[in-house]
Image 1 (cartoon, helix red, strand yellow):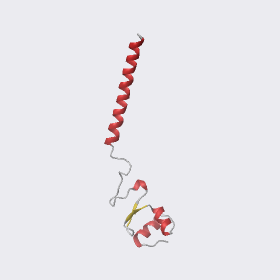
Image 2 (cartoon, rainbow, N blue to C red):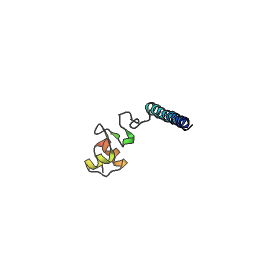
Image 3 (cartoon, one colour):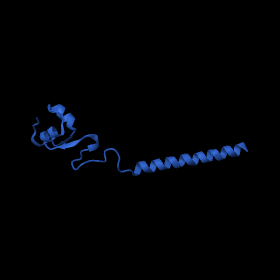
Image 4 (cartoon, rainbow, N blue to C red):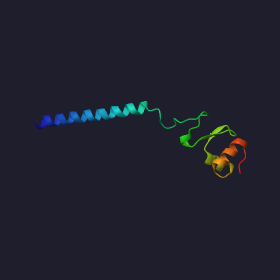
Length: 88
């Protein structure tokens, strides 16, 4: 009696675990909204903080560019630098 109950419990557990792993594998392979899937027209990944800078012709992180070029990190200064090559 105990062996039959143990077999039934093991079979049920295997079915549940199999169903969970099958569900996880299909959702991970069919998802198109993964990390880095938000590239803009220039290939910049916005969710990683990158924006296109016309002046440098590269995807830049505004705060890193501000530190590198010595201007205050702000959206206005980044836009100004990337359009003219100079910021306040």
